[in-house]
Length: 98
Length: 475
Image (tube, rainbow over all chains, first blue to last red; front, side, top):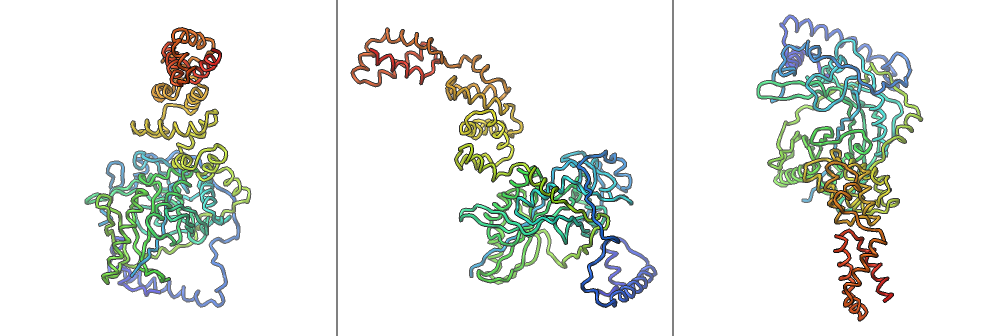
């Protein structure tokens, strides 16, 4: 696995279009160190190759499917309430492709 | 060196369900932006996805039509990526357990039939529509969450024609099964092509290029043929093909670079924990398949074996679901299938073409078209007169017999009335009777013509001819 260094975190932050202070990067780096140590511990559990990953706490299935019926959607103003910038009823973003 | 192309195609089909894949917001085309969204589509905290039953039925129908193994337990996965087109930060799809696996479809090419193998078919949700302008992008979430079927072929397509026929088959299946509009130009059927070249005989794959933005069947063929030539020229001049995404430029008729593929994105797929695995009963699957609207192949077979149409006509009728549906409705009213097919393919097609209409916009009901043809079959009007009636009813769907009467076209099929005219004509033309007796067959034609004239064109010509002949024999 890729080592989590300050450079990796900075690169990830830049891809997600935000930045932090050096102090915050230090804190985050340390937190990752702890998480990775814990993961290593889990990785040391023997004989798990043939164990199926467990996604659900119980081994159950359902047969429920939603009928294809429409309910009232949000009003346009509610749908756009969280958007910082709106133009022509659409959410306006900084340009995301070149 | 000779190369062969290795082509695989991914097709995304937007389903025409009433509601979305995981939410009950409406699915519509062309609505005002951001008016068809609900909290699930916007990923508001606490919302949960609930699988649409009709979308599952649709996926089963298409998987069955493609001869696939159907997984009767539905599992969904998260495809994680950070981009504004899906506000959740992931797309819900089926990665590990697609609903359909290992199918095939038969295509007909100029080199005969070929089996195209299909690796998988899975359900997922569509993303929002992005409009990229010069300095900003606009987002419309109406499309976000629309149910999609993705169909992935195995790379055993070899040229543009095969690719085009393959897409055409898939399009026909999703349209006839009522799963989708399948309109490439509107994006309800979208296809991405992966294409690489390798020396003939090699079993290794070359570097593949992805082509996007193929919005018509003919562009699929053209783009692939162009791309094969482009890659061939690169390889022959010793330049390696680069892994990249290209799009087809319609005006320049060539593929152009969109972006180079650098590092492959890791989507970190994992099981969607908010959807408990769903078990589909045998009965549910069976029912979905049995209630599937009739597909083109079955219609063609029925037209040929039961209705007695030839292959050429049958093929034309099944090119468009709406046309074949119109034909099916008209046939129920008992007119001759052959004549119906002809009228639909010639007269109706010409009318629609001239007025730039689709058969769905046609005023003329299948019943009245059938009635018109029955008038011809019963000898009440000639084929030529039927065209005049057609010109009226195609605009207003009036009853053909009423229009024929109004236009004074209904043929005189009343034997008594025709007989009177025949006696008059024979009396006025003794010379023609003589001529006929002396073996001049043309005399008969002349006499029929005279009767037609007296009836102002309304006498049934076949009937008149037969009756004159009977009379002449008596003389």
